[in-house]
Amino acid sequence: MKGQFTCVVCPTSCLVNAEWNSTELLRTDHSQCKLAWDYVRGEIFDPRRTVTTTVRVDDGELPLVSVKTAPPVPKGTVFEVMQHLAHVVVKAPVNIGDIVVTDVLGTGSNIVATKKIARKV
Amino acid sequence: MRTEEVDVAVIGGGPSGLAAGVAARRAGAQRVVLIERGEQLGGILNQCIHDGFGTKNMGKALTGPEYAQIYIDQASAAGVACYLNTMVLNLSPERELTVCSREGVRRIRAKSVVLCMGCRERTRGAIGIPGYRPAGVFTAGVVQYYMNMRNLSVGRKVVVLGSGDVGLIMARRLTLEGAQVPCVAEILPYPSGLIRNVVQCLEDFGIPLYLSTTVVEIHGRDRITGVTLAKIGPRGGIVPGSQRLVACDTLMLSVGLIAENELAKKAGVVLSPITGGAIVDDRFQTSVPGIFSAGNALQVHDLVDYVSLEAEKAGLGAAEYAYAGKLPRAHIKVSPGKGIRYVVPQYISGTEAVDFSMRVAAPDHDRYVAFRSNGQTLRRMKENVIAPSSMIRFRVRAERFQKIGSELTVELEA
Image (cartoon, rainbow over all chains, first blue to last red; front, side, top):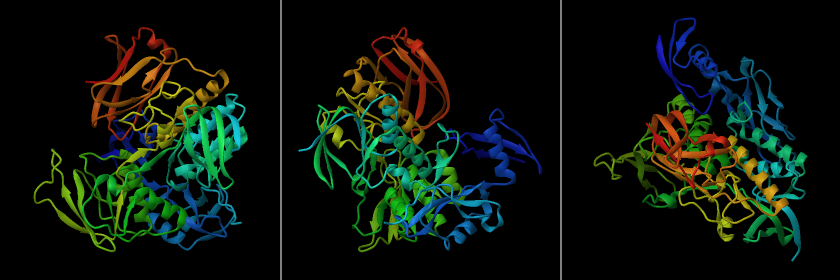
């Protein structure tokens, strides 16, 4: 099979032409770039996304803390992850790197805080 | 009035201010103060919860708040004195700042100043869309603040006008949070934001992007009920019969950013009509000796990584000025030539390496960026894909400037 991908790994945003079969990526016209190769292979066989969103905080100086999925979750689960997080509330203080949800929806990814939220004074 | 004497005063506590302050301290400036009008450091990064920051200067994709925290920690470790909730009301050419906080008004006398005020959004008023003035018209940055910082929803069905990066990011964010985004309209024939954002934020979610299209009317009296979209022809007029109504309860604008330079003007700093920022030399010194500028106040960036690198250089220059009381003036004028809209810095000394930033006038591919002086090409570099939305950066090493004349032109060649 053949197809075209816009690599989004770095800001150069290369347009990559690729050829693959049912099990592996065969060639790209950007074969010198490992990042593009890995990105295109991922997009074909197992597309994943880092979901960045917020969850509510109790007693925080702000009502929300920003979070991300680490590692990225399968693309097909993005909206389920969002639904799941709509019901999650954490308690301040929160630090960068704190795990908010472990193994979200069995994806193997954690939901990790990306912001420091102090307790409301 | 109470007066404080400092070596370096940095105005603005966003990514550029933090990087400038840290660099000035590390370069040996004794008393470095950073003045931030908001409640916290980090600036706009605090509401940019998406990832992709740091890929160029840290080798990994961080979210905005994570990226900011790295510099906030560095500023505290380096001993930068940060004044929060403090607003600079005036800046004189002699580098005397009038600042205001809850404690009252006071003066800060600085040996050098770095302007890091960032930028603000263009609004509906700036683009003049006809119609009533109903509720429900927001700029993308305001939507971002409401959603990501305050847990407030702006609407259920949101049309986006303008394809700037913040607009694209927020189109995805709104979709993830359950709002419907029927389309993004862009008046230009190409996207204003980075290609990667068009792919990640629109294509991934099936949000259509209508190019050469704009909002020609806003409907609704109390709350917006819809917009009329129309195609724009090559000469800027509405294509007859192309109007169509799109129902929505919110219109989100992402129609450009303006460098914030009211203080620079008060100090008599000469601004560029193209960038809206100061005209600077390769040490990021403005036309007023001892006043430096970096970040979005100097030129609107698309990547924070380059803001940090640029501001470090400015902070270094400010520390040196604070110590020596002067810097050698740079006299070689840098001008944009064919196909280039602007180049920063606008003056260079020709004695050390320079990182040039520039934007092209129109999208193109397989072009060479050529640095020419005295009829000679000093350096020429291939660019595969170029677009006005992507700032181009090139380092030119000092030895290339050996045969430079009094002017340097940067242009595109086939």
